[in-house]
Length: 282
Length: 282
Image (cartoon, rainbow over all chains, first blue to last red; front, side, top):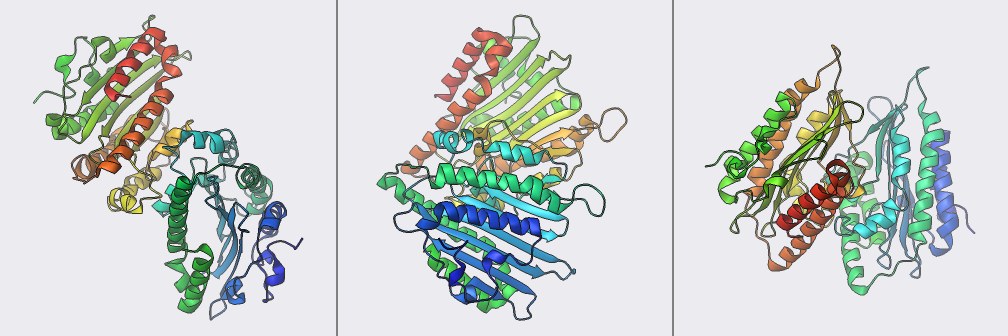
């Protein structure tokens, strides 16, 4: 078996799996999640075929760096693709913005939820966590689906655990579309850790509170969604494909549309956007 | 024009519009919302035809009291029905639980969102507010609908205003289905007011913070949803009816299923449930 996220295909010296700009607990969490996912699903995934200048890229002045890694599923697999990324941008205020993400889309042979994790760190003491299994169907019309994937799996328990921490506040995405895409058990929180001697530090919270919860949710997704067998009829596959494609298009638009050209220049933005659209087939 | 919620049809001395157990600012808010809604939509609504023992009922020991008022829309109206209610239950701990609600369903000749308001007061200093225009469609599949009713109406602004208050915390319904039914701009908050001399009192918050926001959201609903003209084809009407009926059935189940027999006895629970099902046609 190859090592996490197929580093063999990387030409550049800076690798996706290095997560070079984040704290040790943050890196450890990301590496653990990627390895867990690869160990379970690796045999169903093709190598990453993104061009080297999409796997790693930076802006002209060298203040902003990013890495993207996408592995598509074999045609026999229910996995459509697995996407990992990190981004590091120096801020005008002197600090840095660091984002790491891991997500996975399933294909229309199953209607099981997708996986979504994003860590957005905009200061040494502040972190936004987005962790969810976004549903593939309208939950209002499909209460049985809600029961199977969200109630029976007790997905609200990790959310409740995290909510109890004094450092944890709710987070509302500025995009109403993103708010619509997530499930009713989505973890959308801002963690404001103590600075100096006061309260728990952010690294402590990532290691001891956030990591176990992220691993638990990924475990539920792997067991119940990626590896749970679901029968889906032809009619429904069309519906799922239409809904999945729309989410992909809108997510690209929201995530990359406005910020990427500003952060990495128009050329890099176009290149990365084009590569993603090709893999996403949208 | 008749006065709010058609009191003429009431045989009992205790009227829906009296809201006899809540504080003055809470009552004033409810009366204001009901009057505003009736002034705009009254000519499209039939009188309340619920039996007197469903319009007002209590438990055997007389500790729990409730009122229900439903007016169906004329066949020419886009309004399916308007439902108002209050409930007062003495708690074993000595306090009381007071719930007041006002909601409205539109019918499948339009796909515009419904209206939902619920105030749940379980102590003199604690109040849960649920205020939303629940969508009639899967927002993920219909970004244009999200844009029209939630983005362009700036429905997130009142939510953000309320969120800024120190006394306001997020509220998560214990029902994942209810969480799925609401929109991405839903106001779901718990207000924990100061007791004694500390901080703002609950009545102050209801009068000065909550009331203007509830009136603003009802105004948006009346202007953009109840009175906005939308063309809906035959195919879509079937879809809307299926989704609306499912929400009604599930909401009855969640709201009344478990608690009502306990609070009002099996007979009253059956009577009220039966009357609601008849008006809801589900």
